Image (cartoon, rainbow, N blue to C red):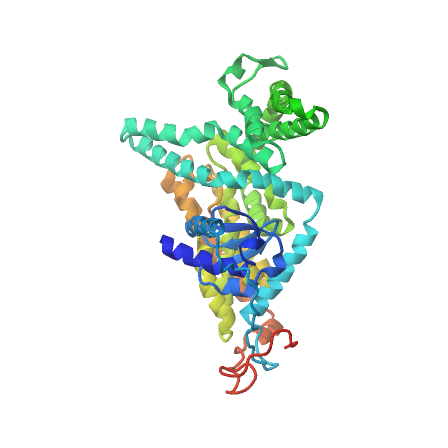
Length: 513
């Protein structure tokens, strides 16, 4: 979108989230605008969902507005400009809000898309309460360390794929060397960025976390001997960087508590870097190296010996894992595999969960021929689903319906099994970055037989997920009772002059209607 369109979207969103005074922080990932809000009760969820540019919302540790790849960066930039610019007409001005008139629906009318979205919101809220455990909150914070790195991982991954394609064709060897340097520079310093973000997330000084984690990638560690072995630069990878930065945060806090304020500026950084760095060299690098190696071996073994079962389980259970909050643990694993092997073989399998949702949504569209409201929601959410943005379909359609969510997971399991079997037969497909899914993952694919073969396997998995998700939902996704409830016409417009009809007086705010 152009800057004008991005600004228009930002201006539309701002008053609907409570205005500038209600926003504490602004960030974005690949598809979502992530807002830290002071009071979430000020959010007008219905009005947000009605904006054409908004593909969905997620109420998590931050309030997340799904805008899609590309659009989210531009809208975030414009929103920041709006927040930085003083506005006399602050969007927080509390003008009385006139409630939208609603027509009284006949008892035989079908639940609308808005009612389904309400159910999805309640399910999401219940899941958020269940997931507010110390372990899951810790996993979420660890995931927050890696989310800001995703754009760079994607950019470097695509450059690496281009470099690999040119190298396989034997074209432009000088350009291949340059592209390799461009794609590898960030990856070689990934531990530093992880350390920086870890300290920032857990309340330490970011640059000290980066400094301690930077020890791991320093070439001179090859001269250091620990546990009878010389260390290897990069040993321990992102796991070691994460642990080293966490230790640095604790050292910094302890030092600040015991050191006089006059000496803090000299003593605290020195103690943090010295003891954090030594701990990384003489303990964490070795331990984290063993863990990282184990993750790589486990992923390779899993696909080589149990590809069918692994794909079936991972593809089928990924969305339930998301609802349980356990998917956060996968992000460091993906990053470790990318750093070790150049790609993560798990992500293409997990992406099949979205394919099952797409196939399921298509079946729901055909089964509920008379429910124009739900069909309109599916039409608007399906393009985003094809690109791997699944929240609008999950929380707006399949999950509130219940049974179709299960049949969608069956489709995801079938797609995952297809990709898993290919891996077991020697055609494993990996992704050189994390973040994208669906069709957006094609440019990031990598495998032992080149991009074309990898794309064929991944595309076959998507088609399998679409087809099985569709068939499972069409034939098993609805009971007769569900069809009787949902496959009926939407409410008819109220007669002129009736409450809620066009031109009728709107109900007063707070009158209980």
